[in-house]
Image 1 (cartoon, rainbow, N blue to C red):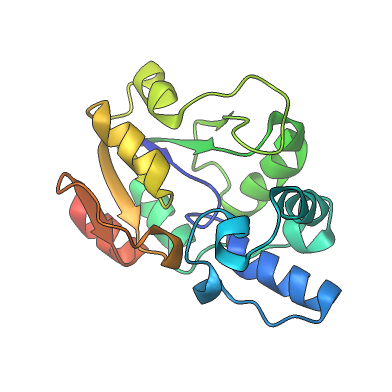
Image 2: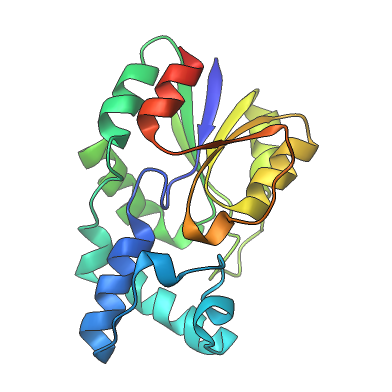
Length: 190
């Protein structure tokens, strides 16, 4: 199988690390569970500009570079990479290619055939949809945490395994499979 895998909050603990970064910087007490929407401005009442600046600052920080993998992801991806072709398909901007590749090669050495940047946020580059890249790669499965991206992929006939997160709790199409852990993903794909 060819499988597309999101990066942030699927492989890399993005929002947990981001909350730590913001709390240290601003003396706040945000946590992952306070993110009830994928967009910070909707979850925390920030302006779109403030949210964008906070993410940009986080991208440039040592916290982002040193973020931990999502619990169970390294072992699961190692298992899935034997006999399948895995591609990271990330919404991150292409401007983060170098630090992203270093992070992936350090934490998931030799497990991915490629890393594809969608430029969805915080970028002026060409924006692409993960569903379109899945189609180009021949990926029939996408592992994702964004409800928006999951629905887009599902609408194009790609099987979606959506990792359960506070920001994706709205109702999903019955064809999208909500999963609680990487162990569950491995079981479903074995």
